[in-house]
Length: 287
Image (cartoon, rainbow, N blue to C red; front, top):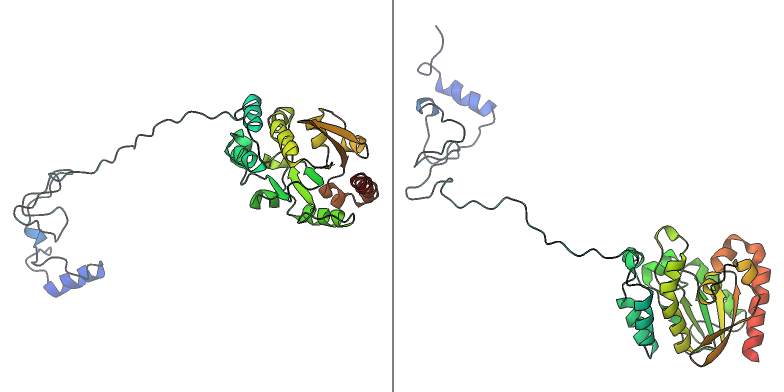
């Protein structure tokens, strides 16, 4: 005869429930599920006085789940933001912002607040300058290196260590009588070369920076400075060793370019040419 609920051994039934994982009572009073009415249709509300979960009773007067206010589970509306141009505010805005600055501190603040487009948004920091403003020598590099981008200071990695040695060889250092900056204040994505459109945005800030720093001599490291100020397409090999003149705000400043320290680390055989350029700088400063 098939076994019915009347002749099931309670101990065996309890052992079966324990084996299935029901090892804890969660209600104050036992509920005989075998005597309960037929299972409700899926989604039907639980009757008053009984919860939808086994072993949970709803106190009289307590609202059922169906009557409780339900949280809004729909999508959260997001207000659309205006798209920012990838190229930034543009050359005219750069000229207006730079020309309005009367001190180096104002120029730095203007550059940090300027919309440099995707280039600036992808960089970690705006790299402005290091050293002593007003020094007789202003050294200007191409673009920030990875270490420069991390801490916001130009020439702070291996190239900076070599530059320190180069300056020391002609009795200069960044903490006393040299001022350091870069043409492009934000590290390009993938360390790519800056294009003409980017250099045209950087040029007003660069020129104003030189005017406010007012050095006696400018040393360009790499070919980007010449391409920005003089719009030349010559490589650094053609630019280096030749004196040029920067004409600023009632100023005429001697400028010479040489190889960037990063290039010298990879091409040490060019250090002789760089040394000759440094000696030319030393002679110009002494004149």
